[in-house]
Image (cartoon, rainbow, N blue to C red):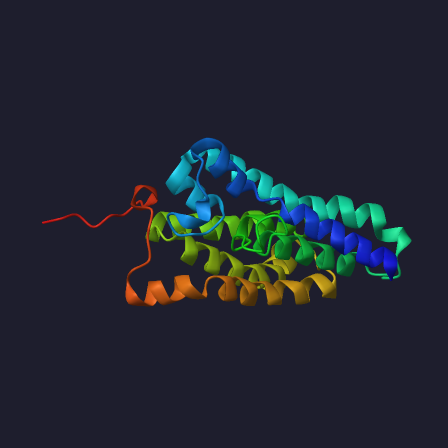
Length: 218
């Protein structure tokens, strides 16, 4: 039990690394949480710092999630009592995402966890992730809403795992990973509850430059 707790703490600390907050302090001497959308993530970094810092933030935030499920869980698996490696990966991944959302190094005010969650998904579902990413990209190009793209990508993951991959790839993920995939959309909905309200009211910010089809003014 003690070894499991150590793994979870290590994953939480890895996830807590405040990438976007440090980038904002270093590049513009600002707290990124006090500007733009107030979210400490790659999207707000893009708005405030530019695409290169945002890409760096996205990479590091994703790496935190991948590190937790592939390296931390992998190195500690034989030293704890959970026999299902997938279950251990899930617990470490959750700890990492919680670390990003409630960062130990940022007064427990982090981001929505999407970048770190993406890294977790790459580690857990390397074949399903590109399909979910395709849903995200297509939605972003059509609507310009990052929040809606994240929501639909999360909702698509269990569909991909349960309906698409068994048919076309003949791969059946372990039950623990399937259950986790069903929980992911609920987490994304929870962290995007304010975005959902703004989408309903028509006040959500969108990246019009990313849109393929734009409304033209008369």
